[in-house]
Amino acid sequence: MDTVHSPGETELLPADIEAIRREFPVLQQEFYGKPLTYLDNAATTQKPQVVIDRLRRYYEQENANVHRAVYSLGELSSKAFEDSRIIAQKFLNAASEKEIIFTSGTTDAINLVAATFGRANLGPGDEVIISAMEHHSNIVPWQIVCEEKGARLKVIPIDDRGDLILEEYEKLLSPRTKLVAVVYISNSLGTINPVKKVIELAHAHGVPVLLDGAQAVSHLPVDVQELDCDFFALSGHKVFGPTGIGVLYGKEALLEAMPPYRGGGDMILSVTFEKTTYNDLPFKFEAGTPNIAGAIGLGAALDYVMSLGFEKIAAHERALLDYATEQLDAIDGLRIIGTAREKAGVISFVLDSAHPHDVGTILDHEGVAIRTGHHCTQPVMERFCVPATSRASFSIYNTFEDFDRLVQGIRKVQKVFG
Amino acid sequence: MDELRDLYQEIILDHNKNPKNFHVMEDATHKSDGHNPLCGDRLTVYLHVDGDRITDVSFQGSGCAISKASASVMTTALKGKTVAEARELFHKFQDMLTREDAAIPDLDEFGQLAAFAGVREFPVRVKCATLSWHTTMAALDDENKIVSTE
Ligand SMILES: Cc1ncc(COP(=O)(O)O)c(C=O)c1O
Image (cartoon, rainbow over all chains, first blue to last red; front, side, top):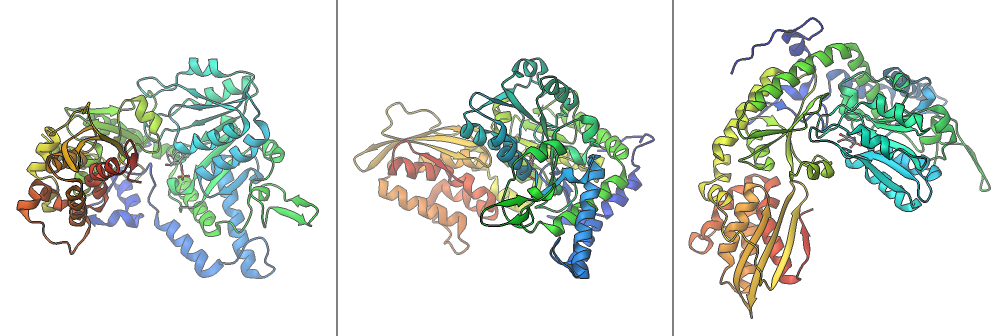
């Protein structure tokens, strides 16, 4: 199979992609004697050498607990940690670094909002609006708090392509709505939701909006002020950073008004047995010793992405998406699940002849790593009447050849199950 | 590639395409649902037990080739066995899939079940091959119980 493709101006040239690939040690490996074709980036992204080196430097030269040390080493770690917060602030274009709360990931960030904002603002009969394409991590925390408070979860339906049905969303908004929580880019369908519109409509009703940005941050530039979202959650490991670290962005006024999440060290100003005074933002929400190395590694990862530039990333991924969609569409007996107007990074599909689990096993033997299953979005599987899908999700370091290998692998699957 | 050929043997592919005893059993005495949330496999096993003997077995559901073929072969293997024999066969089958040192099963006794020996090289697929068996054991232990491999 040959690849005919002429790169445009802002696009990364094959040589640029080669250079990027060389920065990711994992990609240099082989499995079953074949080069690793890593197409599971929606689950987690690989780490560039700069991130790995940064973690190593932290542990070799800067390791000390943050915010409490009077000695120089502790100043180094505190500075590196707080510098990363400023990098994250820049990355999201937040108005203040006080609005950047380090969490263990997207799941933790959403749970934080559910447990604080949710508990404080939801009462019997109130409603939280989510969508039919949410990851379980943006469903279950709301179910828990709704159940506790006698509130209700409302779901924006999606159409057969995997687009939100905005007219239905408008009908759901009411004086009972206390929060809208939606995913920016769907991890199982690839849909890029019109979040600006979603936010405008919610704000017209005075309702704040949380965006699950787990998939978004590696594919498109995020400007929380431009979007005017009220909360934004992300995971470091999905944007070339370490696992166990993430960010919750929240508008300062909202965060100020929210009760603390967990109690412990670092989140307090003073403690007596009678009364505790909580620390200022963002520390109020960061109880205990944080994931210092993770935060610093995340800073390095975000710097790395910004240095590549989203214009180039987007152009390359657009070209990959078009190429891959065309190639996969041409396979008889293959159906793509998720054909939204705006898509990024993800192609889910099912084969007539083989179950996704068998597809995954056979592709693995071709060195091709994809995900099979429900992708933590069981309601999406139900919506499209499939038990599971195979999902190829890509990133900056993927190539047209990666998709050629995927297609070859699928043909092999079809031969086995022919 | 050889490992793959061992996994997807002709017998397994045939049973996947044309599963045996693939239907609902109206007069089942035992029935149980099995679910593998990892891959979305769902199946129901039906048994007709007369005294101590399994006189009929069938299944319904959807799943990957390994789980479907395994359920199909299992139904043919269990028909006519006593409950005690069924349990023993399950343990031998499980050993074959999971234990390095398990004896190569006697083809006469094991029949088509031996086709699943290749699954041992694919630890993540063991659950697929044993889902129908776990579900059957649950049906025999306690009717209408939902089994999950997680
Ligand atoms: C859209 C979306 N939201 C939330 C999450 C949860 O992220 P994490 O597991 O890093 O907390 C994921 C990860 O799979 C995701 O894809």
